[in-house]
Length: 350
Image: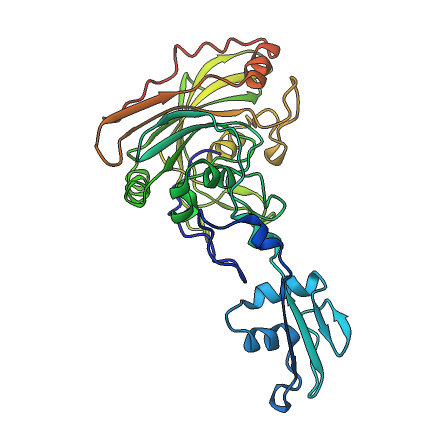
C-alpha cells in the first residue's frame, strides 16, 4: 500500500558490531571473527546450547546464536551443531565463532542513485522506483533504500532507520518522506499521526467500475487470520483490526479495467490494495490480493503521485507531484484508458 503511520524505532544494534558511523570501514568487517572457547560447567548440564551461549556471552542475543548455529559457527565436543535445542553435557568443550550475520551486514552504506524530488537541511522527498525495498529484512539484507540513505548523507547513520518515517511496499512506486535530522524525523512522525500529511495515489484495477464517481471505503483492516502474509478486511471487534478509510475516485473505466485515484485518510499496511480488492477491484499485477500480471505490468499498479504537508521545522506549506513511471503509464494505455489526471484531487498542507 502506501504510507503508514508506523512510529520510527532505532534499527537494532547488530550483535558483535558497533553501530555504523561514517568513520567505520567495511574492511573491518572482513577481519577474522572472534572465537570463544569454554567448557560446560556442572550447573550448566542439560541446558540448550543457544541458552548456554547467551548466558556465557550476555552481550549477544539468543537469536544471534540461533543464527550462528544455522550457519555452522558453533561446535560442541568437536562436532558442528545446527540445532538450537541441542542439550549440552558437563565437561563438553564449546567453541563459537562470532561471525557478523546477514542482519549485521544490513545497516551498511551502499551508493545508489536516488531520485530526489526535494531536499533541504531537514527533509528529503524521494520518488521511489518500483522494486526498491525500503528496509533491510529477510531476503533483502542489502540494496535497500535505507542502505542508499546511509551512503547519501552521513547524518543518516545517527538517525532511527536512517530517517525513514514511513514505508511504501517494494512494488509500489512514488513519493516518500525522509527526515535528515532527529527533530525533523520526530516532527514528521507527529504530522503523519495527526493526519496532516496528505497522500494521493493512482491505481489501475481489474473490473468495470460500477460505483459512483467517488466512493468512501471505511473498512477495518488487520492481519489475515488464514494467511499471516496478507492483510484483510476484518470486523471492527476482531483482534488486531484497525480503522481504515480511503476515498476512491474514478478517473476512467471501461468494461475490463478502471483507473482510479485513492486518497488515504489512514495509513494501514496494504490499505489501498486491501480496500480495492474488497470492492472486487483487485489491482492489476497484485497477485497477493487476487490481481493478475497483465498489460505488460509485473508489479501491483499503484503509485504515490501527490504529497502535501507543512514543513516539519518551518511550517511552510509543501506540495509535490511525481510523474507516472513508464511501466504504469504504458499499462494504462494498454488497458485502453486515459491516464489524464485532471480529475485527481489537488492537495495542499492547509
